[in-house]
Image (cartoon, rainbow, N blue to C red):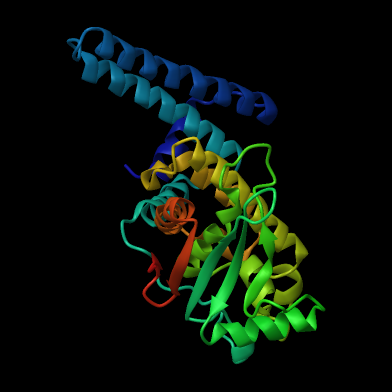
Amino acid sequence: MDLQEYLQEAAITDSIEDDTEAIRLALLGIAGEASEIVSEAKKWSRDKGPMRGLESRVSEELGDLLWYIASLARRLNLNLNTVAADNLVKTKSLWSSNLPPISTYDDHKHEEQKLPRQFTIKFQEDLSGDVPKVSMIAQGPLRERVDAERERKGRNTCVPGQLGDPLDDNAASDDSYRYHDVIHLGHAVILGWSPVLRSLIGAKRKSVGDFDRVQDGARAIAIEEGLAAFAYNYMEENDFAPDAFDWELFKHARRTVRGLEVESQPFVAWKEAYTQAFTVLPNLRDNRGGVVECDLDTRELQLVE
């Protein structure tokens, strides 16, 4: 029996006429049946193994759960076959072990408004002041582009290739947040997305539809900065272990970037972005700086010196 056929058959025994009441009872029923299944799992754990007749009891509870799900879906005009199919598409995307194809965010003709495919950044720490500060300095071909953007914005260009201004931790204690820009590099290298980096190097897509305002504008930049701060604090609690990236952090990232081009990136892509970024960051901190090579084609972020 397919799921939509089940929904239609289950409707015969669903006699509640008021839709609002039916939805309320369906939700309560789903919660109740789910708790019954959890109770069986508790008994299994308590008794160090399944009790006799467990399969039959769980099968019955799952059947009741399905009935309430069908009732809810029917009242909301949902097709259960479509719900199931869409869920498989989503879960396969989220839990695939392979990175998705390289993003097409820069599939346009304006070369000067694209993220460079390969570039090198030096993180340089300055200990001459009251607190340590870190500057990002573009190396090689990117340096000229960065200097032109700083000049266009009327920023000081006395340090060739400097991206933005030097950063300290902006905290009461030394927590190395001054190196957090490596997170933006991770976003760019793995996801092909970083409004912050685009702004720093003059790669905002001003000639591509509404991208400059929506995808590369002030709101998108603030969103990425907020996400980077959240991810930094989350990973710091786990000693920056690269494998600390989990479902909770992914859900936060997805909610944060809702409405932006990057929102459809799957779990594996975000995980790889943070795995690489938080592999490099502690080394930058311990070495008090270093040179990071970024390759958007091979999707690799490497500390080379």
